Image 1 (cartoon, rainbow, N blue to C red):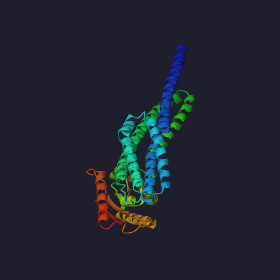
Image 2: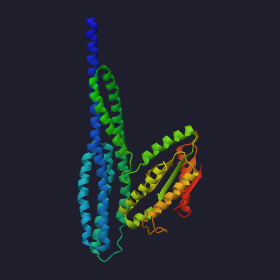
Image 3: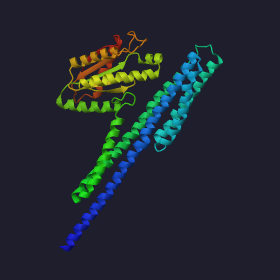
Image 4: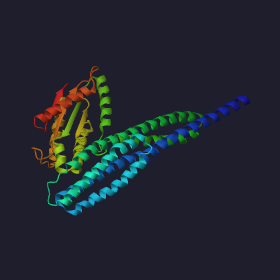
Length: 378
């Protein structure tokens, strides 16, 4: 009996020790992943965004100087240049543990930034050489900035990919820790402390997942969130045989707006439209997000054509009510065009079929004069 008790006691001690060690390493893994988020990936994402803002500030200052020949406009230009150099140095440090991000930044983004700086300097020098020439071209810098905008999105996509990978590692480590903690609780109540610590770290992971699901500019759900929600609703309506609706919308003549008023005001317009869209869709129990560029998507569960048409008209009216000046639009204020599709998901269909129909209806709204909504059953 004594031998059995000793063996049982030894088994309990060894099991508790093994469980504690395993949980310790799982806990350390969670800590390391959290540190990667807090100390590397989130600052890296913010710094990439700051570089874009620095370039926009330089572009604004350069344009102001060209059109006014007033040297005070070079203040934001020079300030943007100083911050740009600092942010570039930060990215080099923060990206060193992420070869794909570091390689893309050094082979694509950094050379393009140098081209933009060269274009800015050439245009400023040209004005200095010919002060009275108000017709000087700024197409060179605009072209280089447009190229960088694409690279900026690609760079952010690489950061997002690293975030998703880190979160998967976090989830995996959290799951392993949870199982062994439960086992440890059965053996001894002391493991409860480790379990609570693990849950705290898990809540951090959920918080970071929430941050990664939002569009950085508009603060509404991003394309990844829309794709996830569409797949979820597609499966749900496939089982219930209910109607699912998709509305695509974009801002009318948005490129002309950017050309006329600048990208800073353009970003502000995107944020205002997104806020109006998100609040209105939420009131109708719909899911809305930024699909890409100036295009947005609304997913309507248990949809009817009448509800979709009503939502589209409401959004048309609300955006016009914002009274955002747009001299390049025939309406003289900012408007949106919408296109929607409604149908019952079937085994021989894909969500892309519904999205393509909505895109076709969006094109029809544009062809018929914009500032309107067309809905089509599939």
